[in-house]
Amino acid sequence: MNLPTRMLSPEGIELTFATNHIGHYLLTCLLLPKLLAATKYQPKGAVRIVNVSSLSPSIGKMRWSDINFDKVNKTLPEEEEPIYDVHRRWGAIDPEEKAYLPLEGYNQSKVANLLFSIGLNHRLYAKHGILSLTLHPGTIQTELGRNMTPETLDAVMAMAQT
Image 1 (spheres, helix red, strand yellow):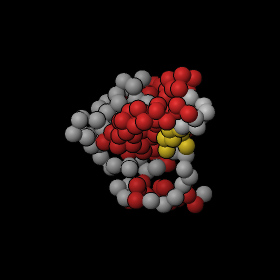
Image 2 (cartoon, one colour):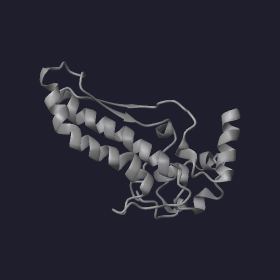
Image 3 (cartoon, helix red, strand yellow):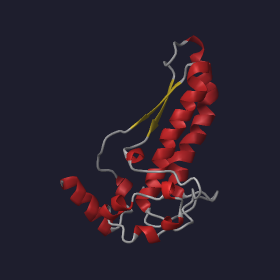
C-alpha cells in the first residue's frame, strides 16, 4: 500500500496493518468453523490456510511497543528499530527522525501475516490437521505503489534495474 502518511482505520489501527493483517485475521476467524468442519474426512494437511505475505519478513520487524507508529523510530527499543539503510534506499530522508515510514508499515503487516501462520500451525495442525502456510507471490507491477512519492518510486525503479 505504501501510504505516504500514517493513517488510522475507524477502529484506530494503522491502516496498512488493519488492511493487510487484521482484515485477513478476521476473515480467517470467520471461516474457521467451516475449515474445522472440512477436516472431518480429510487427511492431515489437506485443509489449508494460505496467507499471502511478501519478502518483507526478511527485512521487516514488529514494533511490539508501538504497533501504530506513534513513536519516533530512534526512540524505539533497538530490536524494533527499522533497518534504516533499507529505508534510505527506498528514498526515505532521516528515517531515524520519523515515526512512520511507508515501507515499514507494509513490512510490519507482512511480518504479522507470517507470525499469524506460524501461530495457526501451532494451534491447528496437530489437533485438527489444518495446515497454515505463508507465501511470497513474486514481484509484479500493481497499483499498490500508486501512493508512492516520486522520490520513492524513483528509488524503487533504480533498485529494480540493478
